[in-house]
Image (tube, rainbow, N blue to C red; front, top):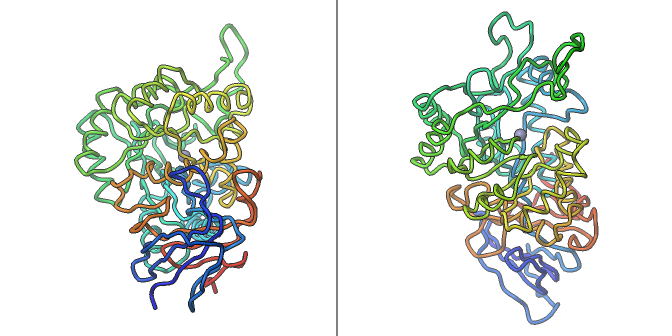
Length: 427
Ligand SMILES: [Zn+2]
């Protein structure tokens, strides 16, 4: 029988932002979809052969990490430049396969992977390999190579011989015409989402953020900010990227660290804004008006921007929430360990955002960050026709910190990958 039913006693409904009692969900292993969601009259359930009993557990939709890099592993082990320079493509692919398995077992059934970090279009190939059942992992939505202007997002060293001897991280383009071409090239190469850099550190760097020489000190030198972020595209270029992506019904993510970059990207029509560590109420008001999704990437900021993290970055994330900005949960996972994805949720809760809203941001918000219906699938809540992505934990995730670190059950597309805490089908 391709259909079977999952019986629950506590099921988090992101649309209601609260739990429902005694709900059963019938799924189909052929389509991978939810066929029926219904409430039982009592806690009792009649189990048919093949049914799964999750009564007594806390059940949620599969989680969505809205900002990942499957081809990066923790910067605590090696910085991005070192990974790109010193690790073979084979090693990076093997690592990515492991990252995907780990993420799935951690309850993440969808990854929006925002840039292959020197691995060209391998993210699209990995997405397809997972979709074909060759290896377990989240459903991937990928960007392939990011768009940036010449020299803006590359491994820059003083010893590059005048060119780039290291793997190119970006599809480097200048001027509206090249931006248009690059979007077309990315979509043809398999991108599900276009990612562009609105700003970046543009000076030579060895291992960001440690940069530049210890020159002799003098007036204004060394500067307080040795390698600040500056715009890398102008308004016309950003607008062209968004307009061209819109022709192919493709969502656009914008990396922005500066207020200037974020304002420009929002006005250009980007669907999601990543990072933004310098903000204003004007920016958030505009994002709320245009329903732009904010992915604050708190988990990477906690490490790379620790000086301002608790004093500025956490409070401004709460401010975005209070002003009605649409949030999604993506920690820039990969810069820290795949499997620790829920750190992003923990930090959002620490910022003062209610746990139920954070869970909604990590499910429905994640789907919206993938473009909503533009991504061609629906997932992140419980309804007929949605992808059958279901996870369960042992404690109430709306009240117990750390509950999501102990994943008991994982189903993706109606296939069970974890049962009673044990991986399934991964021999
Ligand atoms: Zn990133």
